[in-house]
Image (tube, rainbow, N blue to C red; front, side, top):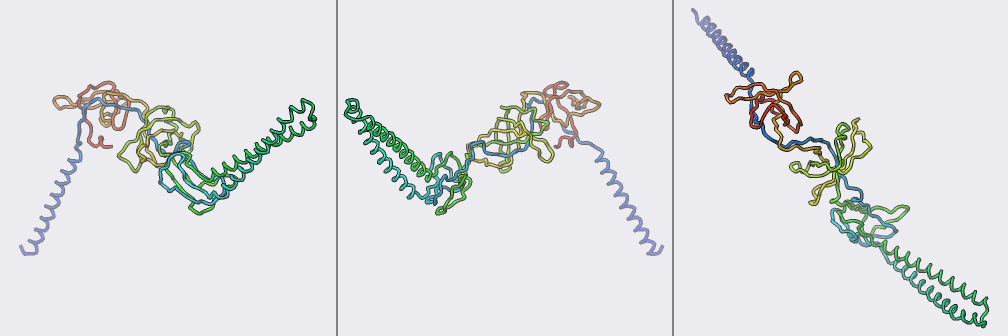
Length: 358
């Protein structure tokens, strides 16, 4: 046998060996894939709740957001407000220029004093001459003239007093105070700028009371019939995903809103925000608890198999063997199902390992 034939035979043997090894590896792999791994779960008592989940937006309650403006035209002399500042009710935010307003108050006060003096004189003349008229020393016509002077003087006093009150009110408008306590959300004016009051007061400061926020949750029409005032709710926001905030349902809007062809009903949920962490317009992931059951038997839902309208589990015996046991289920919460019959506490059920993954 020459060298060329020896080399050819050796190469052929090598190819056959590689192919055989590949076949064996494939067979082993296929066998592994055919096996199903099982895991077990213990039947235990848990607290389950019937839940409705929805998405919502945090909004200020009615009256929690107030827009502050000027009722008179004037130049901003002092601005005491900055975005983010916390203010108390009646705290001074802005002072407008007051020189001309103070002058008008002085003029109105002087006119009131003048009218009051004229009234006192008219009153004195009338009271002096009335007895004389009764004695016949003064004519009735003179008394009528004095009475008229008295009435006119009294009316002038009333007008002067009204003008004085008006001037003082205008002066008070130059000092703009916070109508509510809260946090300043926006400021759209600056010191030295002139604000003009027209038919409506210009808004240049917005205050939000962060302690009076609520969640506007959008509940699907299929679930809204289950929602009632007083039900407890939990929600998270994207910036604090590891924290649950508590609330309660306070109202359900009777009119629906249409979002992407889905009918939803706005449900108001009161919240506690004493720490000031929650802000308006944050997105909230809401879970409303409809009812609660405490201490009910439950297993992972993956352990329950449905077949022909019936439900059963694979119950593991003391000898390690599994037997098929029919069960009845109740509420579902997350990955767990309530077991109403067919199992007892401490039983061990089996399920395919892949089915347990959610």
